[in-house]
Length: 428
Ligand code: CMC
Image (cartoon, rainbow, N blue to C red; front, side, top):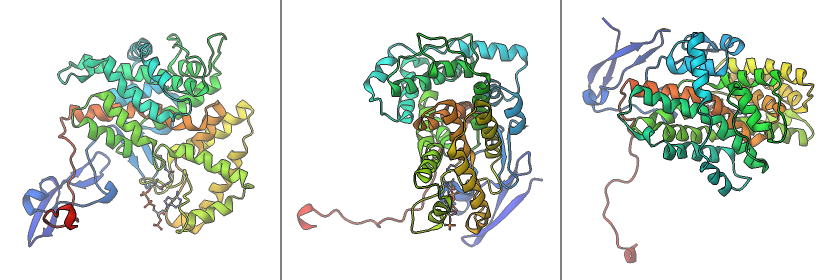
């Protein structure tokens, strides 16, 4: 007999089933609470609400554990390629050699973006934020592939839509970068691997040969893998909730991109570098900014610090921090903001304000320093996060549909005016 939780409410005792996950995580299934008691639950920011069961990513914030489909993030970041991880997230298992070759090959054959879409780029000012452009471009793909709107598409057709999006996203991100520079767009080179192709489209020129440095490919692969999924965060929950209305994949992912843009979520990676630059310009006194972050009358927050779920350390941040040293060393780059970041971290980790609130560097704290070393401009960082997160969003969207989950529609507790009569304007 499965475990039950008992709640006494409205004068009666209600029994609710306890759902147990494979890692022994437990949650009370309250889906029948309202019909049994007339009550709903209230949880601002969903801090303690499980919105779904999921077999994709396991995260234990107390112990700093992150696994995709059971595989520790450290092993994947060390040994696999981004496309291999994308396959794992979407299909549920690591591919064998034949499956991986077929997957790589098919992604390589969908990288072109419809020529007409270049006209959209023409319409944007070169100062447009990459995330606004990216969300619009991804949503616009639905116009070129109307079959993605077909709710009765076969599994093969659905997979083609998924493969198309994975293939075209790097082309779009690279073109957004080119647009910001006013440089000519580069077409994909399909014989290159995913990351090399992306780097060539971003940093190559039509008139020159572009050789991608293997150190750069390794660094980029690692960053994309570390960002590939993170269970039910703000953008992923957005993708699921938009997809639950049966909106098409492109529309659902575009919504995820806009959710990621915010500085409390993926947009933090841009804000971290801007903060570190500001500290540098202000004489490098990191202690002053620690004090500002602690001051409740000051809106300043230490960007790249704190996490809703990690309360000990963020395993992604640990990997990225050690990679930053290695990559900058191999590339012969000495970036003073890396020293400021380390000093800031050292002071914060000794400070009772941060220790007592369990605030540690998150994935965004050091990633921007690597993106910068690779040559990206600061406002591109969140688009790179989106490129990495794409397979996770897709896997979560697919899981939600495969499980035939109902449309997402939370309840509320109304705290507005009681009923009152309309007053004509001359009497107000
Ligand atoms: N600097 C200073 N104080 C902070 C910070 C910070 N970065 N983060 C949290 N706090 C304080 C906060 O003021 C609160 O203090 P008190 O209990 O005295 O009111 C306490 O810590 C708890 O914070 P919270 O805002 O209730 O926590 P949350 O779970 O709602 O927010 C967060 C999590 C990530 C939004 C928040 O830590 C934050 O704003 N961090 C900076 C932005 C950032 O780096 N975001 C990237 C997150 S990781 C990438 C991703 O996956 O999105």
